Length: 485
Ligand code: SF4
Image (cartoon, rainbow, N blue to C red; front, side, top):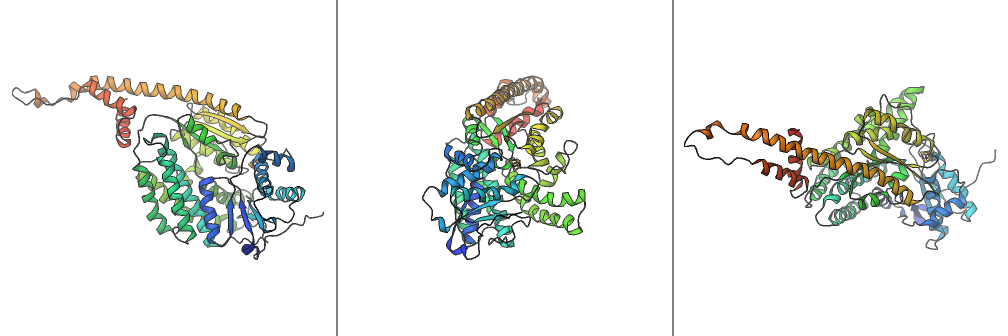
């Protein structure tokens, strides 16, 4: 069989070429780009979007191909055709997951499209951890991997802090401005080759979280929405028609599980496959060591979030167990069992309204995402999950209308539970006030003790629920309300 010849990214090109990066996860990838710059590569994170991106993808990639491949390739071709780059000094970078899914083969589709579109000289760098494309002039050294992990963890932390602060901030734009500020600071550190050791991250992360926690907020009850799905359409605003922005406009708190979970899932699967189907001792145990190393950073992020009153994700080793009995851990195509486990984690954490974003025609995610919804609903009747297909022919209006239906149910439930909490506190207060009186205060001559009035107690709970107290107070009042129930 004739093998396709393609230009390779050689070590010399490090000095001459600019590498274009598709923008999948805007926050995490900005830090990643800084790490590449520090390693000596000139690079640029692509921001181009619009209908021409999809049209170019459709023109040069078969329309049966996964939507993420179509968009990534379209975005590259659009950038190359913009006239902004010297085509003899430009390279592209794309990931290869190394699994059985088509994501391992996007690189070949891209090379074919480059030839067809008239850019055969443009080399493509493969970013992979599975030994594919060994001849790449982009070696994955341990220090670079360390920076990559730091980039993802810093990015995940900034995304979580902004997402849990922004909907409640009293001064519009405060959380976004703080996220931008810290992104600049972290990118600066990474470019100066610092800020990514375990010690430095342990020192920096609490400072970041503390600053977010000091933003004045009104913790009014809001609909909480989790977003899961195929990795590209879950994170990329280009892939999901700016889903996060749309949910923000609907006054929701959005939880986008971290990118690190996906990387841990990929490492975990490296050992799971030989465990299930046979493999060498090293194949079965080396990934476990890598996971242990990652765990130390994971602990830092979780602790920092919890210490500052934010919701933190479950540790990966707990997350792995969530899908047991629902889907096998051998299901590793696409987002596999991770997608199911993330939905359960979100439901258990109170983010029971979920958008499951999946590219149309993505078989793995239709099975582990859409295919698991009924089972999850059986186990968690309050799970309010809506699968949304993303593909070139789906209109944004349709997608948003389907999400609005899910949000309508969520809003109704929120109002019900807020009302219930308020009524229960009234009943509880009516019973408790006389019982709470100190018998000593009944004695003749005893000083009159101020007693909490029923109306006052109810008012303060309502006040907390309607957001006129600070966040800590609100949480405390909510706990009291729950205890009262
Ligand atoms: S997970 Fe879905 S979208 Fe991604 S490569 Fe596999 S089939 Fe394509």
